[in-house]
Structures are given as C-alpha cells and as structure tokens.
Length: 214
Image (cartoon, rainbow, N blue to C red):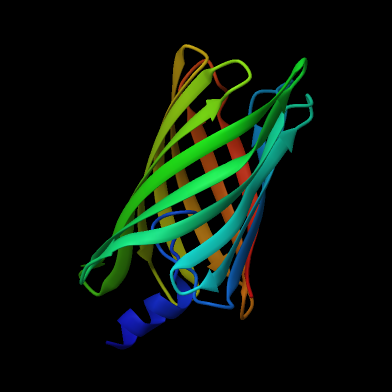
C-alpha cells in the first residue's frame, strides 16, 4: 500500500501525455533538448505544459523548434472517456500551427490515449498507448503517430521508461526506441536523460530535460 501511494505521488501522470488527467489546480511542465549523435544534424528543443482546469478537463501546450527554422506550437484539451479500476481511456484535441522553411500551416491533431497501472513484484509501474493524427490543411498532409510507453518506479527518487514511437510523415515511416531515466532532485523537480534510437534515415540522439510539477 505504501509503495502504491509513493507511486501515485511521484508519478501521478507517469509520462508526457497519456490518458491521465491533472488534478484541478495542478500543473506539469517539461523542457527538453534533443541533440543528434551524428555531427551536423540540427538539435531540437521542446516545451510541454499541462494544467488541470477542471476534474474532467486538462489543458496544455505542446511545441518545439530546431535550428533550421522548423517547429510547431499547439494548444490542446484532454477529457476522460472511461475510467476503470486499473485502466483508463481519454481523448484530446490539439489546435495550432507548424512551420518549415517556405511553409506555414495551421494544424489539427485529434488523439486517443489508453493507459493502466501495474505491479511488477514489489515495484509500481504503468503502461500507455497514445495515438494521434495530425492534419495540415494548407498542403493536405496527414501524419499518424503511435507511441507505446512502459514505465517502472524503481525507488522514491528514480524511475525508468521505455518508449517506442512509430510515425508516418511525408511518405516515409519513422521508428524510434527511447530508454529514459528520471531522477527527482527536489520536491517538485526532476531530471531526465535518454537516448533516442532512430531507425535510418533519421539520426539517433541524446535527450536531456527537466520536469517540474506545480
């Protein structure tokens, strides 16, 4: 019971996004930088924010950019569709914009997320499946994305995650695997370190970030 309570306090929303709602009046922010291992490739920085506006409504921001002038900025809303004893299902809708050299376009991105908690021996963990479908009306581009996350709370200050991401964009498929370590260094502050193992032609990268709950 104590370990379960520690898990709920330390990882109320175990991963970015997912079906978990933020408690009303509580928030979460993440800033991360992804630097390709291959020299000459552009680094990417991202900002993610969630805030519990109501018990059944979480609002947020999801955006980022690289040094080539490409980026995105979206506002989203999430609401639960179904809550079971151990698992839950939520839907979200994001509206915003994407920009690339020579192109700027509004973006509509509906999404669906499923997740559940589990116990592995005496360790608390979680799993989640997130799917989104981005549409750029300006050039009628569609980009489906599927991400599976498996996480485990190792100690009261440490947890590990493994994320697998599939994406289809510009006529090509992209697959990546991201092992991540999260360390809590303050009451509300966390450091994250990861290696993003991309399938060719995208380069693999190191990823470092900071999480903060408020």
